[in-house]
Amino acid sequence: MKLCKWHTLVFRCPKCGKDADYAAQVVEGPQKGSIWDPSYWCEKCNSAVRARDKWLFGAVFGPLMAMIGTFAVQAVPPGLQMAPWVCLAFAAVCCAIVGWPLSRTLSRHLVYWEPCDPAALRRARPRRMSKDDE
Ligand SMILES: [Zn+2]
Image 1 (cartoon, rainbow, N blue to C red):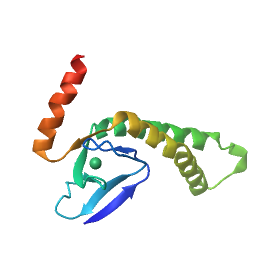
Image 2 (image 1 turned 45 degrees about the vertical axis):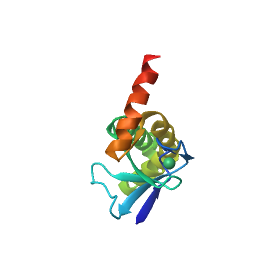
Image 3 (image 1 turned 60 degrees about the vertical axis):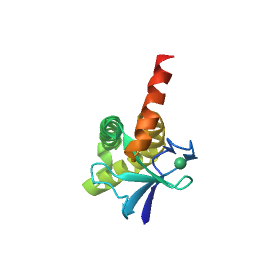
Image 4 (image 1 turned 180 degrees about the vertical axis):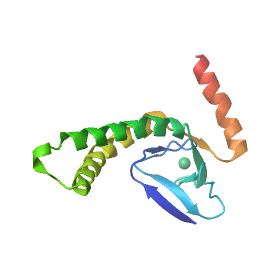
């Protein structure tokens, strides 16, 4: 199995509660998910998990990055006469500087991790519901 570690995502295992400062996506192997619904791997309890509400993360993160990129391009004084690619590179650097901690913060609050295994998911669900009732 091959794992790809995303250091821009904060991971919390739904089964064993392990916190990691990266999410290990399964790139190759039997547990591999689809492009739209990739599987991630907990190295502590060796189980496959998937990210729920990841679209929400994208819906917040994407427009914010676009905004920062636009601001960065507009912040370049017109008198500098910079080539368009320099402006784009500058915008990309700004996005990287702001985007990295932003991505980590957003993934911590917006992405829900749940087990891929349907049986484990059924066990996890009622617990979450009863917690909501309290
Ligand atoms: Zn785990």
